Image (tube, rainbow, N blue to C red; front, side):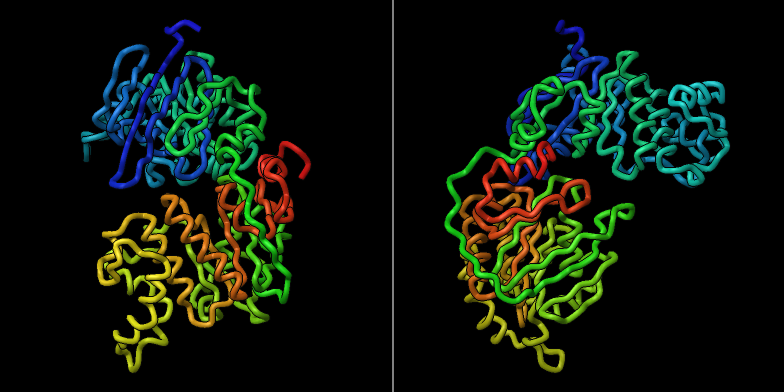
Length: 501
């Protein structure tokens, strides 16, 4: 295909945040008039690459060309003026303003008061943009009065005001129903027919196959499938590319089921999904909960731990507790490690020791006073067992690497008084191999001691070295249950839906 068809080319893109390498050698080629799907699991580098393309982040290495011209964006505004327009899952519109005012937002930037109203785009132009996306609403309508799908179309219509050359659609259907998504796809195809290039980020294979012309897959910050035409790779092959190549045969994992410990019945991973998901984890068992982004796996795991509300019944060791009542769940002996340690898990300004001991403060305090010597006596051996590096329990958690911070969250779970079950979401995401092995050993030891463990992860290698049994979520439903000795191909098929699972 001639070079003139290349709307945007990014090559050799690298970006590091402290000790974390988000991108190391990413490449992306978008062509005029085509929809390009970008796939990759959490942590693959998709978000960082998109931020670089739209001017929100500056890469450490690599270069970007727009229509063959080397380009460096110092801001989102520069990218917008160059015709690169992002449409995010969480819209950047103003619900309290009218449709007309939202369509005029770029013209109003930097203005205020009465001067701003004079800079509203001409109503005929605004009307033409709405017509182009097939949205028939009055310009004076408050945005808040529109459905989510209609608001999404308003944002696409606003992109037309910028002579959009590259439309970046980041999970645009996450909050849309099927008819709204179909309407959006029709508009995207219409825009591409005029020469616009579209980058489409989604976790839903059916949407990708319905809309995209080409696909790129990122894994660990690298491009592993580069602009392949849709249809060249099966769903199973794309899933394999996202999750990684095979690993050595997993170690022997024997588990004799004893009493059921963690039980959840009647969960719905999405409001419009059937409430028929039930899970039981037995004492001494490690259950692997697998699912691609958006499958509902992480939501199910958080619900089981009492960290997310939802319909259905929950119990641990025969004692019922309410969904969303994390305090009660912890009191009953359910430890929980969230997927995002920085936002939901870590107390960064506190010491490493205190980050571990917070789950046991009720047994370490008397009359409101923390017994520090007892805290150190009980917690420090656990920290040593997890091989915290450097071995400085008094140092702030913020000073440790990602892998060592994750060890603190695992240690917090192990320190929970009366521990009966552990629910771990992406327990080794973003950690190095050494920390990964230590965390895996801690999980195995907990199970060997009779703890019921559920590990929800998108890392297939992790599942295959830990789980005695696999549960697979797909499209917000429990799609399959597989034994621990199931072959990798069976897991891939169940995850992607390429074969009957």
